[in-house]
Length: 176
Image (cartoon, rainbow, N blue to C red; front, side, top):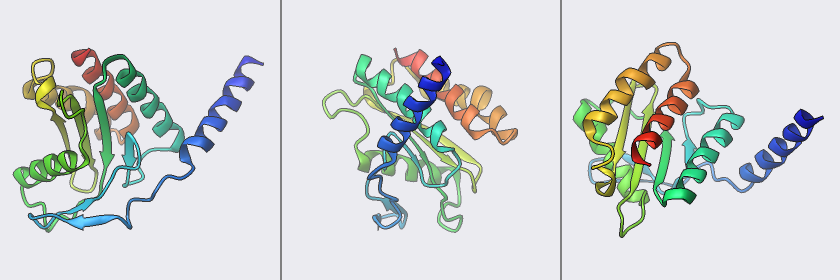
């Protein structure tokens, strides 16, 4: 009976959280580098590339919301299919990632406490952007280690949700 009520609660939460979400595709603009930048996120988890199930998005979103309530840190997860002709190097990918998360304003302005996770399945790239206010708690080297040791092994098994959720847990553990 308890599982039944949990299922009902999940279905209600899914229907409420999915209502009114924008697709994001119709709201894009080209930045100075020629990248197409979506104008705004759909939520904490913006799955433009459709690699997660709705329940997986709800799960990731709930972790992010709980963390933000406890710390005010903001985390955004984005999956995006980037044009390979525009992203010719890791530097281009990093530039796109930084531009995207800066434009969206992840993190509070006075604390600069945002973290962005960008997954680009078609280019086989992932990036963790760290706001200046969190760099003492999560360094670039630690972010790279999370990507290499936690996220990528799951991605190699085509389990994008498990890779991102385990990576998210490791990030939160570092910045709490």
